[in-house]
Length: 320
Image: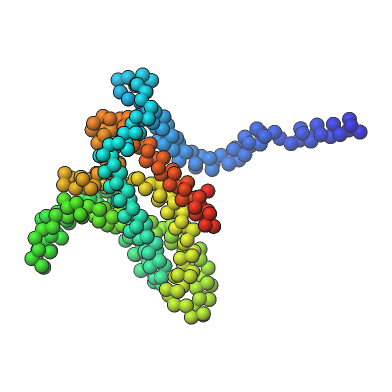
């Protein structure tokens, strides 16, 4: 009996393919899917993961002539400098303030626009509006800032209209420290709000129309339907996007800020991204600039993990 059992198990083992052969067969059967993923995977490996090896210079007094292997190790000195340098503290405050204002005003803008578009019943008009609000996303920041500069400079269209209509003197929109942050927020709203509605409109498309019909039968008005049906359907999407936004709280957009900076507004407009550029490229302080960049990444990671933890504690679906 034992001999028969052994022979039977041997036959079954021979019939069942091993893990390696099963893995190879699965890869071969799904080879076209892997080929589709390959370009994106290569992008992240080449431009995201391999450059991380250069982060080692944050712990060195890096010199291009000595290289990675022979530069002097200084440990955490550059990270300690982040909290000791008054200029870094000022730049960090500017970054957090601009980022907070963007979360406060820019983040809700696509949600509000999506709610308004969802209430439009004319399909042709709705498609035209969607196409119009999508277009600014495809303009580069160079073009956007050029348009803003042409409109708001002292001899620009806006100041000319204000002078003709109200006799006002030119307002220094581009050099005023008080106008810098509102301009940054307004530009981001104008450029990215339409594109941001895509995700929310896709979530709204999954709502069962019978819910709205039942609400109408119960006497619910438009705002009641939005409050009790539309917004709850968007809640999970809003939470996930907000968590992801917190991960980039120290990223305010280098190109936009850099193009808007001038000697008059630099005090309130200089952020971590531009500070790293000035330190790392113009002043060749590569190690300190790298330390600031790593600091940004660590802060973003901590914020994402913390926000995701509390969101799941409240019963919502987090990122993971």
